[in-house]
Image (tube, rainbow, N blue to C red; front, side, top):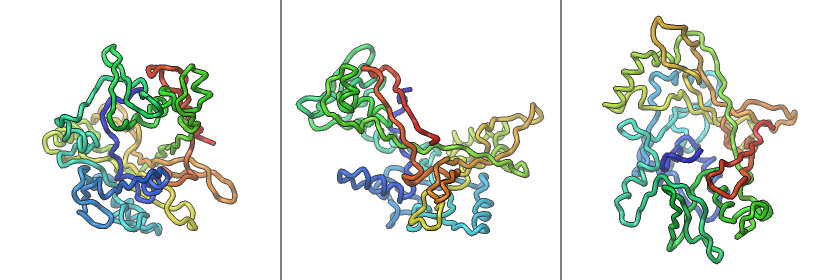
Amino acid sequence: MRLRVIAVGSRMPQWVRVAYDDYITRLGSGLTVSLTEIEPGLRGAGHWHGGDGPLRVTAIDTRRLLHEPLMASAAAAGFATTDDIHGEVEEGFARGEITVDARGRRASASRAYLRPVLRRPNVNLVTGALVRRVIIDRGAARGIEYSQGGRSIEAHASREVILCGGTFNSPQLLMLSGIGPADDLRALGLAVHADLKAVGRNLSEHARVPIEFATRGDITFLNHLRADRIARSVLQWVFTGSGACATQINSCNIVVRTEPGLTQPDVQLMCNPVRMDAKIWWPLIGPRQEHRVTADADPAESDSDEGESGLHSCSLSDRHVLFGTVPLSATTAHIPRQARRRVLL
């Protein structure tokens, strides 16, 4: 599968700052990107949030998503609740936040950053193309070679080449360009420009398992998927940018510690007020689906002394990270990659 949309990565609001800061720290290289520079924020400018960034951040409209009952249950069980999971204290149960613009459309990185500058003379967007390799000359990246419409085209850079092919495409392109494990590259007949054994290795993944819970009554978002209701919601979204289709179907963003002695939260749980296989339904026609809610969970090994395994959510720490590799299987970018994932260890 190849990327068929442009610059979609804009899910920052679902990160908590401790995970983002740890990620940037481990990247190193003098990066100083701050979340306050990215988001305009729903609370205005402050110490923890931006005020005028290009990506509009809004709170999920939870009026029909069982948010209030979940928050009340969490408080009764002794968990912390908060109005700002991305503030000074990043722990507890909170309303989720999303990058959606005032018209109810996804405020993607493409819309926020790329589209406003496409008319600049120094910006050229090429679509329908497949990058074959990075052009290496005298030990430096000088451009790229790509195919489009059956032609092979070279684009040369006067300053630098930034490779943003994603988790799978980037290591594949590096190896096709002669950057990666030397023995593997030579075995495929590729010239080696840099012997970097880590390329295509140690790819991290948080395997997520949706756990469903049946409800005692017909109270989930399945009610809003009745054919006439969802049709009305779609029209409301198209013409007014509001309604059930203008937000994410998420009840609560939960950030907690799996053990009381941890210095910071280590798991994140996303609760959704609907079953994962929910379908649009018609009254009095066919059987009705059972009402269920879901929790996205990550099965990971526990660090407890007993060595037991437990179900955890989308992890925020290395101890719940699972690793895999993307080996190069051919010398052409057209051949699908082979991803090897060690998911359940």
